[in-house]
Length: 637
Image (cartoon, rainbow, N blue to C red; front, side, top):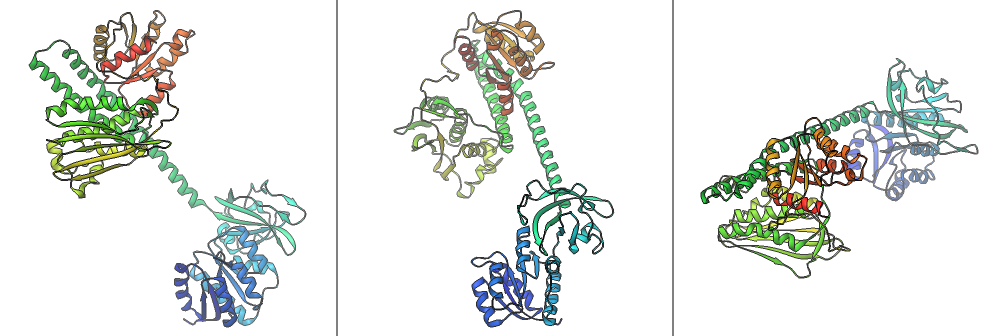
């Protein structure tokens, strides 16, 4: 193919664009020089005397437009071409005012590029130059993919480029002197257009309009309006882009987002229902075990009861892990910030594991560092969950030796960072498996599951709970020697009241509730029986309502000290029942403690409980001691 007989200077500051473009141009251009910046281009131009300058518009140092002005001072007849990724109206306007011959949008279409160079080369050889700005504008916009239209002050079309003709379906020049409303029935100048004097205008952001083709079909376009001065008269420059495909993709993305949200909601509803359905019979099983254990059973019967309780708690742990995993997937975990005594909390937790450690002959120790704050504000329940998992794993995988739990001040700041570590002398973990153990449904070895059990969710959930609170869970381990799991968590410690009211269970203390009138609202007969047994032992007077309507009827006939409200009931659920009680016309109904009983652990449930005006929440299967102390707390204030 014959090369184009023209001397070209190509200027581009990005190497990854300039190098391949240079190779492309060398195949078609007879004489070519390149520069990576404006200063270098000026020096080359003085020696090379190019006929065509091709330049980027935005470069380090001298811009493309400044470069054109400078080179024209000693090469006034040089032809100029802008290659730019920017198609804003102000760049077109500046290029027009400067007399640029062509403006191509990156990425450049090769056919359009060489066609333009050939045309400019031919015009250079023939020494023909455009005489009026409109002709220059046609040259500048001929390769544009977007429609470019110029209107006069009467909103009549005075110019349209080739892209306009192809987009709207009108033949060349068929739109000249026709009103813009033929293409945009609802067209009007934006309110932000303001004229001061005769030639100064301010533009507006692109707007979306419905456009009409010659065949009467419509499409959505993005329209940028600017005021220009052409042939000494003000005009309106429109740059129009067909965004049909973009809108289609946006709609597809929106539908996909809505489908994903609907699927997530359906999943959460399913898990909430399943949580309720699994926890409800577990409440009956574990509640019955508690009751039987207090009936002075024989030693062999007590062994059976302990086995039942252990198995029920294991099943509950698996259910909780699966629910936490689902909430983490949906980013649905929210963390509380309540005050609690840090040392008391951890001491109580260690006591739970002391007996199991003693049974295995393992020394379990707890070490508190100096200057550790007494009271902190954070999520004590999630801290318990994290430490329970780490200490429980240490006990599971340690057959002899010791387990050391250490709590120390990591950084005294706002918030205060506290470091926790659990060290064991257990079986250890291979180095290449140290990250694998934190993956969902994964354990260090397949044999681990068979020998020690577990779902492979515990450590994955633990790390996520730490990370979501702004910490990081680390592990060091050596096979046959043991492991160290450590993490830091932020807590608030400033301006805390050391006298705080948090209702929690104390396993060593049960209160007599003689004289307390309780309304138990529960539709499940087994749960009614279990709750009634405990309430009777604590000397409460209890009435039972099997649904919300019965509860509303009973509460207006008798004064109760507290209401225990199941949430999922037929006919009228616990939420609506509580709302109706709170709306009754008496301070008694607005102030009576209502404690929600729920087998669902989702945040949405807790939020719904608060919105319904309930006082507190207790998860099923409930710990009898915790129920006892909640009733005491809310009725003895």
